[in-house]
Image 1 (cartoon, rainbow, N blue to C red):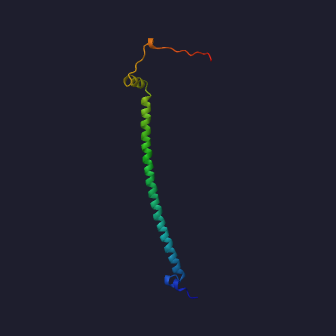
Image 2 (tube, helix red, strand yellow):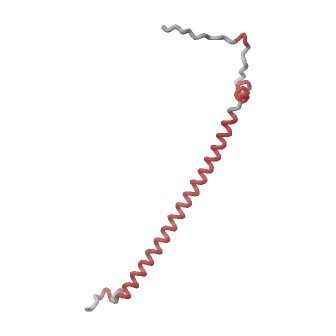
Image 3 (tube, rainbow, N blue to C red):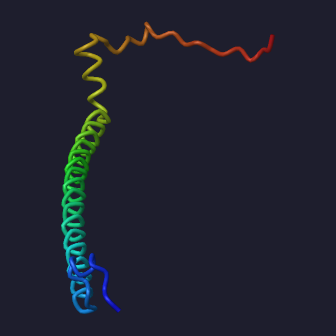
Length: 106
């Protein structure tokens, strides 16, 4: 049987050359997939680094907020802000008015 002229022109007339071409194409596709996977991994790693940096910044902010919360919780801090910033004073006993709740229902 005579091989087709196109196969002869491509060099695929014999089985060994067809196998060689198949292996070369497989090698080329495999190499391209390695390059693609490496590129995707680098891109994903860069995204991971950005997210880690953001997480670190959020941790720092969380620590600052906890410190601020503990500062505002001090007993003297509220009284100090009231007297200095709002000019409030503790009333004299004679100025205090007691209000009693009436238990009668209308």
